[in-house]
Amino acid sequence: MENASKALLISAAVLLGLMIITVAVVIFNTLSSFSQTTVAQMQERQVAEFNNNFTKYYGQIDGQTIQVTIHDIVSVANFAKQSNIENELQGETGYNENTNYVQVDIKIGGSTITKLEKQDTSVYQTLIQNNSLVADENGKQTQTKYFVCTNLLYSTKTGRVMYVAFSDN
Image (tube, rainbow, N blue to C red; front, side, top):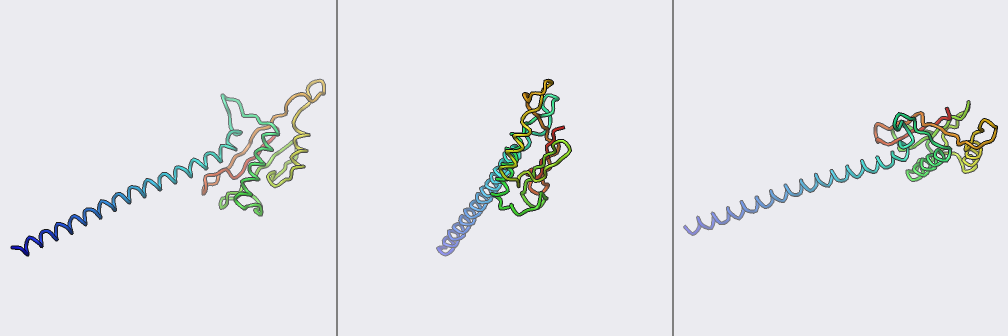
């Protein structure tokens, strides 16, 4: 009888141990799932914040196409340049689905400047000097010149903006 009671105690201890291990595994899986969800949400938020630097210039507000100045475009190009540097993508030849490279193009009149993000400060200064103002009916350059974002492409792999195009038309 004494051996039977010891056997019952041992089996109860083993059963209790298995229950504790099962509860620990369930808690671990729950916390792991929560952690993965949190990381995914943080990554989505980072992508949305990144994309907002470009999307705020694209589309319409209250039926009116969003207009931007040359200063906004230079800011976008500088942001794209900084992003490309941070991602060590300066050697890329242009945007594609497989990288986080961001390309910015601008069409002014009949000419297009591609890869504005690769240009140096002197190009930006010239763009600002030549495209900040337009002449009014008296020939004085007093009115702000506006551009529109004509194209915005997202990478299907990363969800990030990879191409932005502006035009003065």
